[in-house]
Image 1 (tube, rainbow, N blue to C red):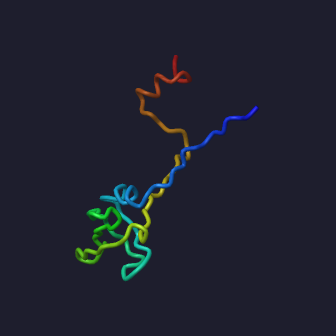
Image 2: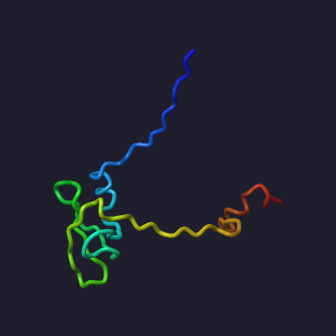
Image 3: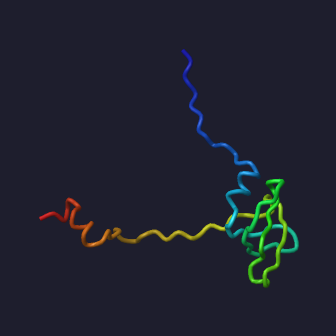
Length: 99
């Protein structure tokens, strides 16, 4: 008896899809004249891979960069060190706080 094979949906995103997700996001440029700089993605060009970016802290310099030469900047996450408070009203309806 053969067993069904379960596939996870781990599809690799194409460069065009990735470029669309980076629109209006901050990215770090990894290659070229502006390597190491942070930039804001302003537009995705017609080819779907090239990004028009505004280099941060350079008085509005504009550059065109291929999507493979940038990486997304992810915000740091801070995890709560204690139990989250939902406020006095919400906390009062939790089972442990009922009178």
